[in-house]
Image 1 (cartoon, helix red, strand yellow):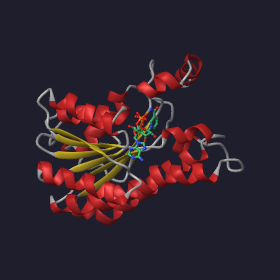
Image 2 (spheres, rainbow, N blue to C red):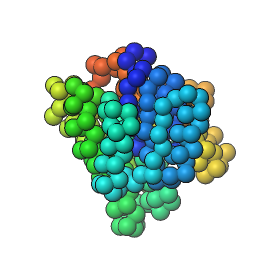
Image 3 (tube, rainbow, N blue to C red):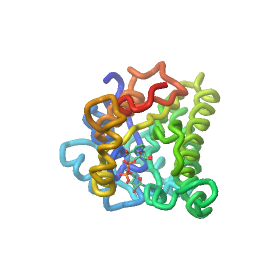
Image 4 (cartoon, rainbow, N blue to C red):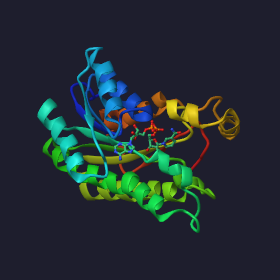
Length: 253
Ligand SMILES: NC(=O)c1ccc[n+]([C@@H]2O[C@H](COP(=O)([O-])OP(=O)(O)OC[C@H]3O[C@@H](n4cnc5c(N)ncnc54)[C@H](O)[C@@H]3O)[C@@H](O)[C@H]2O)c1
């Protein structure tokens, strides 16, 4: 892809799954990456694995709900690699899904925590990345949404609300700073077989999702990483304010 070599990207929530695959893809394209994750061990492991291949990668302990931590992640990119060209805001409170029920029964602490990680934390990343992107004359913000944002489901209320909030955030950012060279987009994955999903989901549940998928297989982290890399690259330079489904055709809009 054009325009990724020697760029600098932050992956907020890059210690596993889709974020880890994105870090790998961006470094394969010649970029430097700063990988922040609540699971500091995973962030360091991913960075070490990539660095062992000759890539420029830094792993950091990071909590998207804490403003100083977000600021520290952005500063690390600037201090270590000289600036910032894009951020993949990817962290989500997956554990909260266990009791993320419906509008009548969802525990308010679950709702608040989900919004704090999946939406307020994304605002914090946006707020602190933007000044550095503007210093470079522009840049790309890519958020990870979900098909759950527009499917309509009887459960996972907080998750769906948080992901829909991201769509408002990115459309605002594209509108407010688009003329300054800022692009803000989201990828909305369908079911992606990450390590955690491999353990959490039953074969029957996976088979049911495959049944409503037009493509012959479920998603892999590299499928989403490819779209994130495209949106970060110069090949995606006229895409702004969009939510792009990468889901094997589960949703059609
Ligand atoms: N896997 C799927 O099927 C799927 C489908 C649709 C959307 N998504 C979205 O993709 C994104 C990545 O999910 P994944 O499937 O790779 O799961 P994952 O659990 O492997 O990745 C999520 C990462 O976020 C980190 N994280 C959680 N809370 C954090 C916090 N407070 N601060 C910093 N990091 C934190 C986790 O430690 C983890 O590394 C999420 O936004 C998720 O909602 C995933």
